[in-house]
Image (cartoon, rainbow, N blue to C red; front, side, top):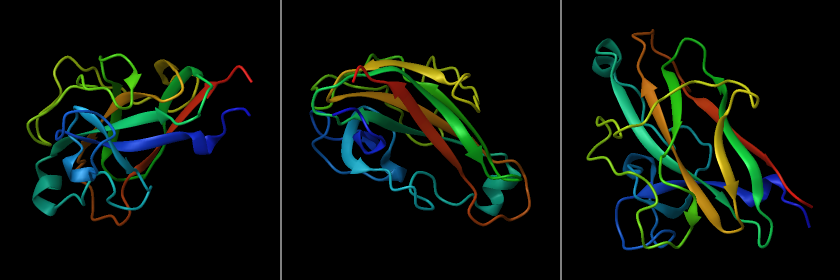
Length: 178
């Protein structure tokens, strides 16, 4: 059976535990190290909280780490890419960066992503861009069945007027042999 969209999961990260895919997490705690068991729901504030008035005025920059997980039982997701499919007009600006750690098995005991001290600390040696199409997306490489790869998200407040439902949509696509 080929890979279908439901096989590609986006999960939060966790700095706790001793291996990936062993603990739950949430958006506020998604600061790298391991893949958590918690899937991103797509709901408002699932990754970032609301931008406060003082954060907006200060052009606050915050970071989160999420994982792309190939949950297919046997097939690899080949030539996988990630991009910003949409962004709320007039709101904060988003940019992404693929973690420099290679893809790994979801249960790996080795750190699967960089780790940051808090949401205001940029992950070291990461370059952020804002690709808006699959053709300009960032390469994740090949994710074998049961593997994951970390993606960092940077949100920069834009000193905009108050806005409900600020955010964006990140998409992942790839190929499969079947």
